[in-house]
Amino acid sequence: MNNGQPNPGTNLGPKALRNAQTIERLRELDYTVTDLGDLELDQVLEKKPGNTYLRNLNYVAKACSALAESVENICEKGGFPLILGGDHSIAIGTLAGLGKSYANLGVIWLDAHGDLNTTETSPTGNIHGMSLAVSLGIGEEDLVSIGGYSSKIHPRNVVLIGVRDLDDGEEVLIKDIGVKTYKMKDVRLLGMDQVISETVEYLSHCDGVHLSLDVDAFCPTLTPGTGTPVEGGISLADGLIFFKALHKSKIITSLEIVEINPLLKDERNQTAIITVDLVATLFGGKLSENTLKYLDGEKC
Image (tube, rainbow, N blue to C red; front, side):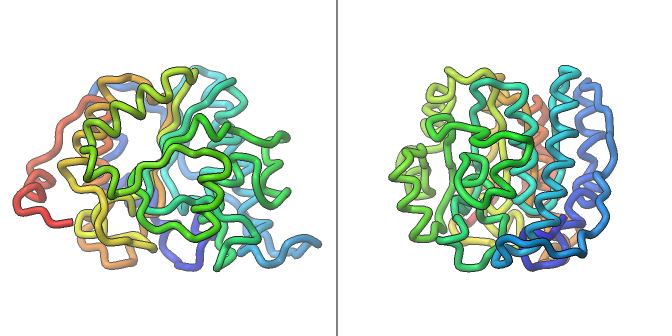
């Protein structure tokens, strides 16, 4: 899906991730993987009364409702939901589905952005910049109510990591509701080891932890194929520390990968390949030789 933002191409993210051997890598690590295929949706053409400022509101709401149902079904069967996106608006559906199975769900939001805008604070009307706020029960009712309930997660159960591009309204909301936030300057000051150690401890009271991974969290030289790159991101070395620590902690119970756009500055599917390589370490894998070369002289 690319309807939560203006650029064509994020709808190709799932295919790029499949081509980067996501499923094969997991099976090589002895995981049983059931591929449910792509979630196909018909375009919503009709307009209904409501907030017309938000881009493709009807379509995004429909898509997220379908995704929420699918994620809920996976959880009911005891599976680990792995969602391949798509723009970050899909997190609204992911969290709506997860919230049915976890009474005290935690969320690690690895992203250059906070995605905490509302209709009042968004400079663009792009829903991918509102997905976390919506999941906290703040924002457009058609989105907040997906899944038949509001407030899928509590602010005290959210940790933002890697953010470096926040709108004024997002800064205010973070302070008002108390979302634990590690900006990139904090990552550099504290070190990724300490950031992830504190995060795991902070979310230790949760009965499940979802990792929402936006590839623009990383340095643009690593993941150039994304719509809103921001300089000064997470390095490959720190990404490796992050995922290895989470593997050791065993707290992650679901994962989504979003905002890969192969049409934007990507070459030979680099963004998806490096992302899959890093994510594999979350499941006990190792970086490939192709990705390890980015450790030499890495600049972010």
